[in-house]
Length: 285
Image 1 (spheres, rainbow, N blue to C red):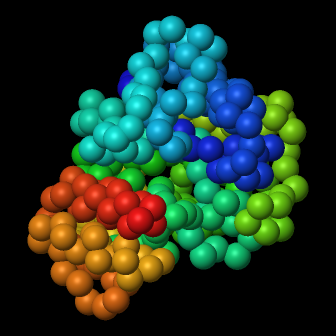
Image 2 (tube, rainbow, N blue to C red):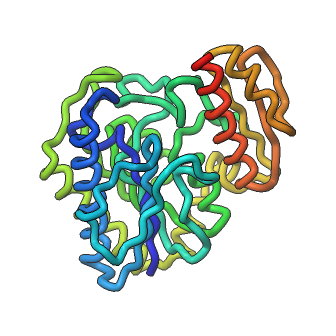
């Protein structure tokens, strides 16, 4: 089977702020990614794996530490950012090092794609985090979300949407930049075991069954299935919305609010990515 891993930083054990040294970030992120790979391959020894290095500019993973038969998507900008590299040939998605949405109480470095410009993102009226928005694209491809790791608030939020997935809590935040954390080796052990359990479920029940299960429930259907769908971005400032409102097809409904409607998940995702770039430009003016 083929597995897609999307890697972020804020949910990795031991990391408490964006001021951590780059080398420390890279070491810890690579360690948790390797643990997920080991967990998958402890069950599915022939697993093909594609990894999207998805924090910041996508230049985090230490490539010489990874198994040399995996493929890695690196660099930025790229059209589908955190899910670049996923396609219909992938049988499952795993998200490592993820975090709670912007505005979450005691969420580790909480944000939604851009801490510099975005206040909130909604899909058909529901507040979403990065996992949920990423999965709109992957669900359309029939890819089930089977595993996620990150801080306690991330796991609690995303488990509401994906109750059949396996989640591993790596730390418990006491503020945006403070936390009680597992040690790296302990976190890697739990991630390895969690990824193995998720892989067993996939191999037992099959991709189609798990993909169908994740669409059950009113909110899941409204977010992952409803078409056309409307995504709404609420910015931190009116100037960010001023610039983003130039995006063709977008509709401004307030000083800081911009929406886009489409029946194509790729168009919605590109709208969101364009909003982050426009917001960053306005932030730097």
